[in-house]
Every structure is written in C-alpha cells, then in structure tokens.
Image (tube, rainbow, N blue to C red):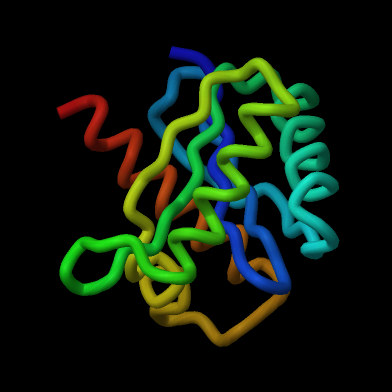
Amino acid sequence: MARVLAVDPGKVRIGLAISDPTGTIARPLSILRHTSRREDALAILKAAAEHQAWLILVGVALDLEGEVGPQARMALRLVDVLREEGDLPITTWDESGSTQAARRGQRRDALLDARAAAVILQEYLDAQKG
C-alpha cells in the first residue's frame, strides 16, 4: 500500500491528512481554506501529487440513520469535482464524529480540521488491515 490522502471537507476549512508509505499510520497534514469547489479540488489534487498519494479518501458525514444529509451532499459534490479534475481513485468514508474525536483532550486550534482528517484516515486504514 502507498500513501493515502484524507480530506475532511467543511464549509470554511478543509482538513487534510496523509498516511505513512506503508498505509499504517495517519498524521494531520494541513488546512485549506474553502474557496470554491473546483479550486478546493485542484488544491487537494495538488497535495495528493506532492505527497505521492495513490488514493484520496473523502470524509462524508452521514446522519444518525446513516443517510445522506446536507453536509454529506456537499462532500459528495466535492468528490464529483475531484473525479472530473483528476485521475486518482477517490473513495468515501463515514466521518461522523471525527471532529469530536479529534477535539478530545484538546482545545480548538488551527490543526483541528487536519486532526479530524487524520481520525477519518486512521479508521479507514485500520479497517483495511482487519
């Protein structure tokens, strides 16, 4: 397995996380400021290329019933643009609760969204191993 880039999309900020080359450990990478869906997608694809990711994982916040709500629709529209603009495989992962998990024991800081992306990525990586 090679590196995976994870995306935690938000209305204002987009958190990015990257795995190690073995696909075992996730770490926060950076925060992007949301500008437009296309510009966001291009910045995400650029980060994936810079870090030699073979896959982009996008967190989708499903509601309590596991259904697609407004936040999830926003993330899925980003997925569509990533697929249109790039040629990397894109997959989604239920990110419900990732921000709360990233916040545990921490106060809000500039890397919260990147830590949330790392939580999403670590859950994905762990599921692929098991």
